[in-house]
Image 1 (tube, rainbow, N blue to C red):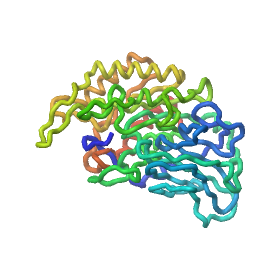
Image 2 (cartoon, one colour):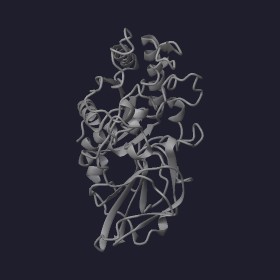
Image 3 (cartoon, rainbow, N blue to C red):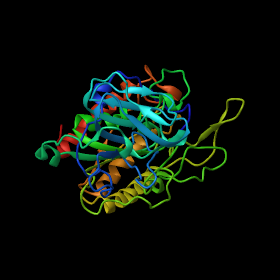
Amino acid sequence: MITSTETMNLLTACLALASPLISASPTPPWGPPHQETPPFRYLGRVNPATRELTWPATGVEFAFVGSSADIPLADVTGTNSIDLTIDDDEPIVIDNVTGPFISTPASLSHGYHTVQLRKKSEALFGSIFLGDLTTISGLKQPHPIDPSHHHGIKRMEIIGDSISVGYGEDGTFPCTNTAAVEDGPNTYGAMTAAALDAEYSIVAWSGKGLIRNYVSAEPDTSPIMPELWTRWGANDPDNSYPFPPSQPAVDIVVINLGTNDFGYLLTYPNGTSYPARPPITQTQWAAANVAFAHEVLAKYPRAELFLTSSPMLSDGYPAGTNQHSTQSAALRAAVEEIGPQAHFVNFPPQSTETLGCDYHPSVREHEVMAGILTEAVRGVVGGG
Protein backbone atom coordinates (compact mmCIF):
# COMPACT_ATOMS: atom_id res chain seq x y z
CA MET A 1 0.00 0.00 0.00
CA ILE A 2 1.94 2.96 -1.24
CA THR A 3 0.27 5.89 0.41
CA SER A 4 0.87 8.88 2.57
CA THR A 5 -2.15 7.97 4.69
CA GLU A 6 -0.18 5.26 6.51
CA THR A 7 2.99 5.03 8.57
CA MET A 8 6.23 2.93 8.42
CA ASN A 9 10.05 2.96 9.05
CA LEU A 10 12.86 0.67 9.88
CA LEU A 11 16.51 1.04 10.93
CA THR A 12 18.88 -1.68 11.98
CA ALA A 13 18.74 -0.97 15.72
CA CYS A 14 17.05 -4.23 16.64
CA LEU A 15 18.87 -6.66 14.35
CA ALA A 16 19.77 -8.82 17.31
CA LEU A 17 16.11 -9.19 18.21
CA ALA A 18 15.05 -9.89 14.65
CA SER A 19 18.00 -12.05 13.53
CA PRO A 20 16.53 -15.13 11.86
CA LEU A 21 17.15 -18.46 13.48
CA ILE A 22 19.41 -21.10 11.96
CA SER A 23 17.56 -24.40 12.02
CA ALA A 24 19.06 -27.59 10.67
CA SER A 25 15.85 -29.46 10.01
CA PRO A 26 16.11 -31.48 6.79
CA THR A 27 12.48 -30.67 6.08
CA PRO A 28 11.56 -27.14 5.02
CA PRO A 29 9.05 -25.61 7.44
CA TRP A 30 6.57 -24.51 4.79
CA GLY A 31 4.85 -27.16 2.72
CA PRO A 32 5.88 -30.77 2.11
CA PRO A 33 9.55 -31.79 1.83
CA HIS A 34 11.14 -30.33 -1.27
CA GLN A 35 14.46 -32.17 -1.10
CA GLU A 36 15.29 -35.65 0.12
CA THR A 37 18.50 -34.84 2.02
CA PRO A 38 19.06 -31.16 1.36
CA PRO A 39 22.38 -29.55 2.21
CA PHE A 40 20.42 -26.30 2.10
CA ARG A 41 16.94 -25.21 3.14
CA TYR A 42 14.54 -22.67 1.74
CA LEU A 43 13.10 -20.09 4.13
CA GLY A 44 9.48 -19.06 3.78
CA ARG A 45 7.42 -19.84 0.71
CA VAL A 46 9.91 -20.65 -2.03
CA ASN A 47 8.75 -22.79 -4.93
CA PRO A 48 11.62 -25.25 -5.54
CA ALA A 49 10.60 -25.57 -9.18
CA THR A 50 11.41 -21.91 -9.82
CA ARG A 51 13.70 -21.07 -6.85
CA GLU A 52 12.19 -17.59 -7.03
CA LEU A 53 12.40 -15.40 -3.93
CA THR A 54 9.29 -13.22 -3.97
CA TRP A 55 7.63 -12.91 -0.56
CA PRO A 56 9.31 -10.75 2.12
CA ALA A 57 11.97 -12.56 4.18
CA THR A 58 12.08 -15.56 1.84
CA GLY A 59 15.52 -16.99 1.32
CA VAL A 60 17.84 -19.91 1.86
CA GLU A 61 20.22 -21.18 4.51
CA PHE A 62 23.14 -23.57 4.24
CA ALA A 63 26.54 -24.41 5.69
CA PHE A 64 29.92 -24.68 4.01
CA VAL A 65 33.55 -25.34 4.81
CA GLY A 66 35.98 -22.78 3.45
CA SER A 67 36.75 -19.08 3.66
CA SER A 68 34.08 -17.79 1.24
CA ALA A 69 31.03 -18.94 -0.68
CA ASP A 70 29.28 -17.74 -3.82
CA ILE A 71 25.49 -18.14 -3.99
CA PRO A 72 24.60 -18.55 -7.67
CA LEU A 73 21.75 -16.52 -9.16
CA ALA A 74 19.86 -17.63 -12.26
CA ASP A 75 18.22 -14.24 -12.74
CA VAL A 76 17.26 -11.02 -11.00
CA THR A 77 14.27 -8.88 -11.95
CA GLY A 78 13.56 -5.37 -10.71
CA THR A 79 15.27 -4.08 -7.57
CA ASN A 80 15.78 -6.30 -4.54
CA SER A 81 17.42 -5.80 -1.16
CA ILE A 82 18.65 -8.63 1.07
CA ASP A 83 20.15 -9.49 4.45
CA LEU A 84 23.11 -11.89 4.35
CA THR A 85 23.87 -13.37 7.77
CA ILE A 86 27.09 -15.30 8.40
CA ASP A 87 27.47 -17.41 11.54
CA ASP A 88 24.60 -15.61 13.30
CA ASP A 89 26.49 -12.32 13.14
CA GLU A 90 24.78 -9.02 12.26
CA PRO A 91 23.35 -9.14 8.75
CA ILE A 92 25.23 -7.68 5.81
CA VAL A 93 22.77 -5.51 3.89
CA ILE A 94 22.82 -5.43 0.09
CA ASP A 95 20.48 -2.69 -1.16
CA ASN A 96 20.39 -3.78 -4.81
CA VAL A 97 21.18 -7.36 -5.73
CA THR A 98 22.81 -8.03 -9.09
CA GLY A 99 24.04 -11.31 -10.56
CA PRO A 100 25.57 -13.68 -11.16
CA PHE A 101 26.46 -14.36 -7.51
CA ILE A 102 25.83 -13.15 -3.99
CA SER A 103 29.16 -13.64 -2.24
CA THR A 104 30.09 -13.92 1.40
CA PRO A 105 33.00 -11.76 2.59
CA ALA A 106 36.30 -13.14 1.32
CA SER A 107 37.96 -12.52 4.69
CA LEU A 108 36.28 -15.32 6.64
CA SER A 109 38.57 -17.69 8.51
CA HIS A 110 38.85 -21.08 6.86
CA GLY A 111 36.40 -23.46 8.51
CA TYR A 112 32.76 -24.31 9.01
CA HIS A 113 30.32 -21.42 8.45
CA THR A 114 26.55 -21.03 8.35
CA VAL A 115 24.90 -18.68 5.86
CA GLN A 116 21.39 -17.30 5.80
CA LEU A 117 20.05 -15.11 3.00
CA ARG A 118 16.70 -13.36 3.39
CA LYS A 119 14.96 -10.97 1.03
CA LYS A 120 14.27 -7.58 2.64
CA SER A 121 12.08 -6.17 -0.11
CA GLU A 122 8.67 -7.36 -1.29
CA ALA A 123 7.41 -8.95 -4.47
CA LEU A 124 6.20 -5.77 -6.16
CA PHE A 125 9.80 -4.50 -6.48
CA GLY A 126 11.26 -7.64 -8.04
CA SER A 127 12.41 -11.23 -7.68
CA ILE A 128 15.64 -13.11 -7.08
CA PHE A 129 15.94 -16.47 -8.84
CA LEU A 130 18.45 -18.72 -7.12
CA GLY A 131 20.72 -20.86 -9.26
CA ASP A 132 21.92 -24.40 -8.63
CA LEU A 133 22.82 -24.27 -4.96
CA THR A 134 24.52 -27.66 -5.07
CA THR A 135 27.39 -25.97 -6.93
CA ILE A 136 28.38 -23.91 -3.87
CA SER A 137 31.97 -24.80 -3.04
CA GLY A 138 32.39 -26.64 0.25
CA LEU A 139 28.65 -27.14 0.79
CA LYS A 140 28.03 -29.26 3.89
CA GLN A 141 25.11 -30.70 5.78
CA PRO A 142 24.36 -28.42 8.74
CA HIS A 143 25.48 -29.57 12.16
CA PRO A 144 22.68 -31.54 13.82
CA ILE A 145 20.66 -29.82 16.51
CA ASP A 146 19.09 -31.21 19.64
CA PRO A 147 16.02 -33.16 18.40
CA SER A 148 14.11 -32.37 21.59
CA HIS A 149 14.62 -28.65 20.95
CA HIS A 150 13.59 -28.90 17.31
CA HIS A 151 10.45 -30.82 18.22
CA GLY A 152 9.27 -27.82 20.23
CA ILE A 153 9.90 -25.18 17.55
CA LYS A 154 6.76 -23.27 16.60
CA ARG A 155 5.96 -22.26 13.05
CA MET A 156 4.36 -18.89 12.41
CA GLU A 157 2.79 -17.43 9.30
CA ILE A 158 2.09 -13.69 9.00
CA ILE A 159 -0.55 -12.62 6.47
CA GLY A 160 -0.68 -8.92 5.81
CA ASP A 161 -0.12 -5.78 3.78
CA SER A 162 2.57 -3.08 3.73
CA ILE A 163 2.88 -3.08 7.51
CA SER A 164 3.86 -6.75 7.49
CA VAL A 165 6.31 -6.39 4.58
CA GLY A 166 8.28 -3.71 6.43
CA TYR A 167 7.35 -0.93 4.02
CA GLY A 168 9.57 2.11 4.54
CA GLU A 169 10.90 0.73 7.81
CA ASP A 170 14.56 1.61 7.21
CA GLY A 171 13.75 5.17 6.16
CA THR A 172 13.32 8.29 8.27
CA PHE A 173 10.26 10.43 7.61
CA PRO A 174 9.83 12.31 5.36
CA CYS A 175 10.89 9.82 2.70
CA THR A 176 9.50 7.67 -0.08
CA ASN A 177 9.52 3.90 0.07
CA THR A 178 11.98 1.92 -2.07
CA ALA A 179 13.23 -1.67 -2.09
CA ALA A 180 16.27 -0.53 -0.11
CA VAL A 181 14.25 0.75 2.87
CA GLU A 182 11.88 -2.21 3.18
CA ASP A 183 12.93 -4.75 5.80
CA GLY A 184 10.87 -7.91 5.96
CA PRO A 185 13.35 -9.76 8.23
CA ASN A 186 13.09 -7.00 10.84
CA THR A 187 9.32 -6.53 11.01
CA TYR A 188 7.13 -7.09 14.05
CA GLY A 189 6.40 -10.60 12.75
CA ALA A 190 10.06 -11.56 12.48
CA MET A 191 10.80 -10.00 15.86
CA THR A 192 7.95 -11.95 17.44
CA ALA A 193 9.19 -15.18 15.86
CA ALA A 194 12.68 -14.57 17.25
CA ALA A 195 11.30 -13.86 20.72
CA LEU A 196 9.28 -17.09 20.61
CA ASP A 197 12.09 -19.17 19.07
CA ALA A 198 9.77 -19.81 16.13
CA GLU A 199 10.29 -20.23 12.42
CA TYR A 200 8.30 -17.81 10.31
CA SER A 201 6.95 -17.06 6.87
CA ILE A 202 5.56 -13.72 5.68
CA VAL A 203 2.82 -13.74 3.05
CA ALA A 204 2.17 -10.05 2.55
CA TRP A 205 1.94 -7.44 -0.20
CA SER A 206 1.63 -3.66 0.01
CA GLY A 207 -1.72 -2.17 -0.93
CA LYS A 208 -3.64 -5.42 -0.50
CA GLY A 209 -6.76 -5.98 1.54
CA LEU A 210 -9.07 -8.68 2.81
CA ILE A 211 -12.17 -7.41 0.97
CA ARG A 212 -10.71 -4.74 -1.32
CA ASN A 213 -7.34 -3.19 -2.08
CA TYR A 214 -5.98 0.32 -1.64
CA VAL A 215 -8.42 3.05 -2.64
CA SER A 216 -7.85 4.51 -6.11
CA ALA A 217 -9.77 6.57 -8.65
CA GLU A 218 -10.26 3.47 -10.77
CA PRO A 219 -11.21 0.36 -8.76
CA ASP A 220 -8.26 -1.95 -8.11
CA THR A 221 -9.27 -5.30 -9.59
CA SER A 222 -5.96 -7.04 -8.81
CA PRO A 223 -6.03 -10.04 -6.42
CA ILE A 224 -6.80 -9.49 -2.74
CA MET A 225 -4.86 -11.23 0.02
CA PRO A 226 -7.09 -14.31 0.42
CA GLU A 227 -6.30 -15.11 -3.23
CA LEU A 228 -2.59 -14.32 -2.96
CA TRP A 229 -2.37 -16.46 0.18
CA THR A 230 -3.04 -19.57 -1.92
CA ARG A 231 0.08 -18.97 -4.04
CA TRP A 232 3.44 -20.64 -3.49
CA GLY A 233 5.48 -17.72 -4.78
CA ALA A 234 3.85 -14.32 -5.05
CA ASN A 235 3.95 -14.55 -8.86
CA ASP A 236 2.77 -18.15 -9.06
CA PRO A 237 -0.82 -19.08 -10.02
CA ASP A 238 -3.61 -19.03 -7.46
CA ASN A 239 -3.96 -22.31 -5.52
CA SER A 240 -0.39 -23.35 -6.36
CA TYR A 241 0.81 -23.65 -2.76
CA PRO A 242 0.70 -27.26 -1.47
CA PHE A 243 -0.54 -26.67 2.05
CA PRO A 244 0.96 -29.31 4.36
CA PRO A 245 -1.47 -32.17 4.98
CA SER A 246 -0.03 -32.88 8.41
CA GLN A 247 3.53 -32.09 9.42
CA PRO A 248 5.24 -29.75 9.26
CA ALA A 249 2.19 -27.65 10.00
CA VAL A 250 1.71 -24.04 11.00
CA ASP A 251 1.07 -23.45 14.69
CA ILE A 252 0.46 -19.70 14.67
CA VAL A 253 -1.22 -17.53 12.03
CA VAL A 254 -1.22 -13.75 12.36
CA ILE A 255 -3.66 -11.83 10.15
CA ASN A 256 -2.94 -8.10 10.00
CA LEU A 257 -5.18 -6.60 7.32
CA GLY A 258 -7.61 -3.72 7.04
CA THR A 259 -5.53 -0.61 6.48
CA ASN A 260 -6.33 -0.67 2.77
CA ASP A 261 -9.88 -1.96 3.12
CA PHE A 262 -10.84 0.93 5.39
CA GLY A 263 -9.50 3.58 3.03
CA TYR A 264 -12.22 5.30 1.02
CA LEU A 265 -11.20 8.95 0.58
CA LEU A 266 -9.27 10.51 -2.28
CA THR A 267 -8.21 14.11 -2.75
CA TYR A 268 -8.95 16.53 -5.57
CA PRO A 269 -6.06 18.67 -6.89
CA ASN A 270 -7.40 21.58 -4.82
CA GLY A 271 -6.91 19.54 -1.64
CA THR A 272 -10.56 18.70 -1.03
CA SER A 273 -11.26 15.10 -0.03
CA TYR A 274 -14.11 13.07 -1.49
CA PRO A 275 -15.40 9.51 -0.97
CA ALA A 276 -14.21 7.34 -3.86
CA ARG A 277 -16.09 4.32 -2.46
CA PRO A 278 -18.31 3.50 0.53
CA PRO A 279 -16.69 3.04 3.94
CA ILE A 280 -16.29 -0.48 5.32
CA THR A 281 -18.83 -1.26 8.03
CA GLN A 282 -18.27 -3.14 11.26
CA THR A 283 -20.57 -5.91 10.08
CA GLN A 284 -18.72 -6.29 6.77
CA TRP A 285 -15.35 -6.47 8.47
CA ALA A 286 -16.44 -9.04 11.02
CA ALA A 287 -18.01 -11.28 8.36
CA ALA A 288 -14.97 -11.09 6.09
CA ASN A 289 -12.63 -12.07 8.91
CA VAL A 290 -14.81 -14.99 9.92
CA ALA A 291 -14.90 -16.25 6.34
CA PHE A 292 -11.13 -15.98 5.86
CA ALA A 293 -10.43 -17.53 9.25
CA HIS A 294 -12.40 -20.59 8.23
CA GLU A 295 -10.34 -20.81 5.02
CA VAL A 296 -7.13 -20.66 7.04
CA LEU A 297 -8.29 -23.25 9.57
CA ALA A 298 -9.30 -25.57 6.76
CA LYS A 299 -5.63 -25.62 5.71
CA TYR A 300 -4.08 -25.33 9.20
CA PRO A 301 -6.64 -27.08 11.44
CA ARG A 302 -4.47 -26.96 14.58
CA ALA A 303 -3.32 -23.37 14.26
CA GLU A 304 -4.07 -20.58 16.69
CA LEU A 305 -5.24 -17.45 14.84
CA PHE A 306 -4.31 -13.94 15.96
CA LEU A 307 -6.40 -11.22 14.31
CA THR A 308 -4.85 -7.80 14.78
CA SER A 309 -6.06 -4.25 14.48
CA SER A 310 -4.09 -1.89 12.24
CA PRO A 311 -1.78 0.63 13.91
CA MET A 312 -2.27 2.85 10.85
CA LEU A 313 -5.97 3.33 11.56
CA SER A 314 -7.06 5.90 14.13
CA ASP A 315 -10.27 7.33 15.53
CA GLY A 316 -9.27 10.82 14.47
CA TYR A 317 -9.12 10.39 10.70
CA PRO A 318 -11.32 10.52 8.75
CA ALA A 319 -13.20 12.71 11.19
CA GLY A 320 -16.17 11.04 12.83
CA THR A 321 -15.48 7.54 11.49
CA ASN A 322 -13.65 6.03 14.50
CA GLN A 323 -11.94 3.56 12.19
CA HIS A 324 -9.66 1.96 14.76
CA SER A 325 -12.52 1.37 17.19
CA THR A 326 -14.77 0.09 14.42
CA GLN A 327 -12.16 -2.37 13.20
CA SER A 328 -11.37 -3.53 16.72
CA ALA A 329 -15.03 -4.11 17.59
CA ALA A 330 -15.49 -6.07 14.37
CA LEU A 331 -12.46 -8.24 15.13
CA ARG A 332 -13.68 -8.97 18.65
CA ALA A 333 -17.02 -10.05 17.22
CA ALA A 334 -15.26 -12.20 14.62
CA VAL A 335 -13.10 -13.89 17.24
CA GLU A 336 -16.17 -14.76 19.28
CA GLU A 337 -17.85 -16.30 16.24
CA ILE A 338 -14.76 -18.18 15.02
CA GLY A 339 -14.26 -19.89 18.36
CA PRO A 340 -11.48 -20.76 20.81
CA GLN A 341 -8.71 -20.93 18.20
CA ALA A 342 -9.09 -17.21 17.40
CA HIS A 343 -7.67 -14.33 19.42
CA PHE A 344 -7.84 -10.55 19.04
CA VAL A 345 -4.63 -8.50 19.31
CA ASN A 346 -4.95 -4.75 19.67
CA PHE A 347 -2.20 -2.75 17.99
CA PRO A 348 -2.98 0.82 19.12
CA PRO A 349 -2.66 3.71 16.67
CA GLN A 350 1.01 4.30 16.01
CA SER A 351 3.02 7.15 17.43
CA THR A 352 3.59 10.08 15.10
CA GLU A 353 6.85 10.97 16.83
CA THR A 354 8.98 8.56 14.79
CA LEU A 355 7.69 7.53 11.40
CA GLY A 356 9.04 5.57 8.49
CA CYS A 357 8.55 6.40 4.85
CA ASP A 358 5.10 7.49 3.68
CA TYR A 359 3.74 7.54 7.23
CA HIS A 360 4.41 3.85 7.82
CA PRO A 361 5.55 2.28 11.12
CA SER A 362 9.13 2.89 12.18
CA VAL A 363 11.52 0.36 13.67
CA ARG A 364 10.43 1.58 17.07
CA GLU A 365 6.79 0.99 16.16
CA HIS A 366 7.59 -2.53 14.95
CA GLU A 367 9.29 -3.17 18.29
CA VAL A 368 6.17 -2.02 20.12
CA MET A 369 3.98 -4.22 17.94
CA ALA A 370 6.31 -7.19 18.45
CA GLY A 371 6.09 -6.78 22.21
CA ILE A 372 2.30 -6.77 22.12
CA LEU A 373 2.08 -9.72 19.74
CA THR A 374 4.71 -11.76 21.57
CA GLU A 375 2.84 -11.41 24.85
CA ALA A 376 -0.44 -12.39 23.19
CA VAL A 377 0.98 -15.44 21.44
CA ARG A 378 3.00 -16.58 24.43
CA GLY A 379 -0.13 -16.42 26.55
CA VAL A 380 -1.81 -18.91 24.24
CA VAL A 381 0.89 -21.26 22.93
CA GLY A 382 3.90 -20.55 25.15
CA GLY A 383 7.37 -20.42 23.64
CA GLY A 384 10.48 -18.33 23.98
